Image (cartoon, rainbow, N blue to C red):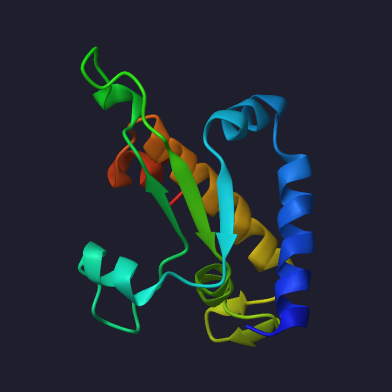
Length: 138
């Protein structure tokens, strides 16, 4: 990712954050969001991802609230957002159209950022992939 693409993405990210409800901002105080260009090779290996074609937009690390107990009351949760994965999932920076309709472009990236943030925060609350899919955050 080039410096200008990173700056462009980060501006969109800030716009998306500003548009989220205040309750989500309170969560972000508990679960910080970290922006990175891409996951490290080591992280991909730890996750068992070997296929370079697999897209990873974000990752929640920590113990979901539903799994905490007296023995594990606190965990250092963090949500990583991967710029390149989000842009790839959205279809790229340029809006194009094919037989299935439009894809890519700034608005689609903005929406993918929103979905990724809410998806990973959902994991913090113990929601699984099926739950997130039903909510439209998969």
